[in-house]
Length: 203
Image: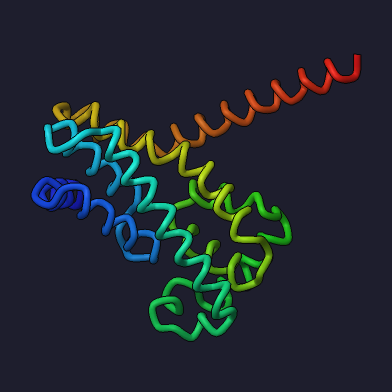
């Protein structure tokens, strides 16, 4: 939790701009966990350094801009981007081939689920852009929908746990599992709504 404490200190001193910049770096593949960064952003609002609702908005913009930058760089430079030093560390030719294989298996859904797979996001977004598998608009919608689930959960978790360190640590450890549960619930709800509408239209 040392990283979390350091981020809280930095964000508390520099506010929304520091959170935004950190999330942009997360999107670029920096070794900085996005979930911990979002929680730290929430914590400082819980401590009185800003509004949690504004922080959610700032975090959404930072996350989506960082992701979109990686997608558009891949789209513009294609496979040549694999020769870039910082990209080569994240996306080796072998990993690039594996991500392409996952696209073949799961289709564009992979871009949605990548947000819930730490360490996969940047590789998936660069590959999606480089291989021209999807338009930017579809990418943005899928990524945006996934971010609408994950970003508020992490930020509000930090906000509500700002003054209860033990509770916060427990839920950070459970966080990824909780995200998958929330995602499963949303998928089930959407499926039920779709099924009911289809049933009504058939009758």
